[in-house]
Length: 289
Image (cartoon, rainbow, N blue to C red; front, top):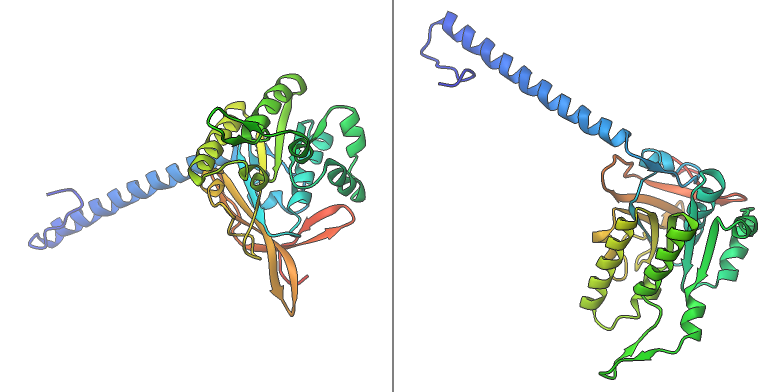
């Protein structure tokens, strides 16, 4: 019979001893569980953090993105995904000494820079000082002629391999720590089949992890809430999913942000409203703005 098993045929004294033994074992198990949980929490707290610098957002994710993580920001048109990514890149260079590169596919580099200026970001200075780089993949896509393979297949010259080649050079020569891809959907159309796309996304994200950069990858959403991406592939491979969308509140739509997933860290799971003020995104704690 195990120490915490009780034989009800025993005398009252023997029964009392068995009960005390059971309580002792339960307390020991409880202490072990508590110690393990504390160890995990301490590990999470000591993890390197990459702050976005977005007002009210870093508090939701334990102080910032885990260092070296891949973070999917999904949402419909107008949800401020590109502005979120700009905060991440600009604040990294201006406040935290971490150089960044922003790959844009659908929107021109000029438009991205114009948006940054509107919110008072010092993007011109940071570009001049080679702390921030804006790479216009969309323009490259327009200018480049597609390559025709030996089998007669059309191969788009702007794809994930293009980005990897750029990044290898930037990481080596410009000490890049932060990366934005805006958006993954603009690159995805270069691939003919979902199987090929899945394989290339997997290779690309494995490349980002190997380089140790922290990245924000924008993905278009099919829903107003921002929870459903068009391909669905990247959400399984990414370390976190940040859904930016719209929610109806008291008769009007308001922009919202939700941390749906974040590996290796505790995070807030509530849906939070956010405003776009003079300095950019400001995340609130309650819906009654």
